[in-house]
Length: 343
Ligand code: FPP
Ligand code: MG
Image 1 (cartoon, helix red, strand yellow):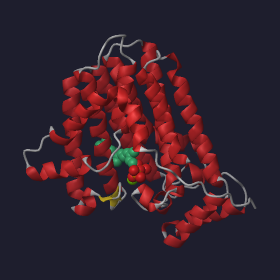
Image 2 (image 1 turned 90 degrees about the vertical axis):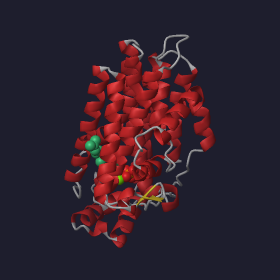
Image 3 (image 1 turned 180 degrees about the horizontal axis):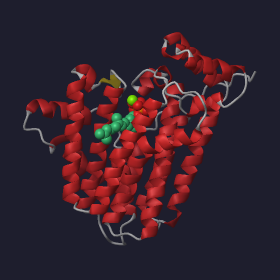
Image 4 (image 1 turned 135 degrees about the vertical axis):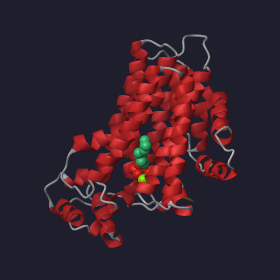
């Protein structure tokens, strides 16, 4: 039996780190923020209140930062970010927020970022409609951008998000180890939107094919790193750090990287974890606690940190063809910002 490693404490990256990272796009980020918090349809005051709830709930706007920094890193020397770059950043955050509002319905979550979800505060029907309203706003942004390639990219993302969720639903309580399925699902539900955010601006800026591809690869790899870290935090985080209960993936029968690393072994802890999932004991407090303990004490955490680090390195490598600039440095720093949550 492997000796129990001390459990790494997850740490939140500081607000100061994020401030320094977004400095090259600070002014544009403020415009995006204004758009999200005041300029959306709100002629109905109740809808306005709901929009305020979802956009003023402490989201870090990581996808906005990726979109603006990706756009800026792809500009020709002396050029400035333009209106279309701002709209593309808004669009990316709208789709992200809409998908979370719907995700909370699917997961029957009561808390997000430590606050009551729309489905909990009101009901599922209202949350579905609010998510739809945000998707409608996103399509208005796409119309304003007027670029068929970008419409295609975001259309594909919407399909990927749904397919990723469906894939996850279909593999609940499935404990056979299939890394390809896990990675494909993570690309669909998370990395595809990161990638759209990171490279669509380069298309709008008429950057070279090489730069567009590099920024797309960056988004896919950073998105995978982000999702793997998120899956890790579900095992290592506390409820105050996560803004929701830890172990929620396991309780829902969602088998992610930390569990897969244990399940692929052929020893007693792996057998016991399989048993907990197969018999659905994992959904109960006692079963979930035992599952988390098995994962923590049998290398699931360390192996997951190593996997996230591998994608972080791939994301860094992707940027090698992008010309040096403040924006490029920030894209690199953003990778460490995502990864520091594992420490
Ligand atoms: C959070 O995952 C959820 C997502 C990354 C995507 C959810 C996508 C949908 C619900 C489909 C969107 C619908 C349309 C029409 C495009 P998580 O549950 O692993 O993370 P969490 O802990 O933040 O909830
Ligand atoms: Mg969820």
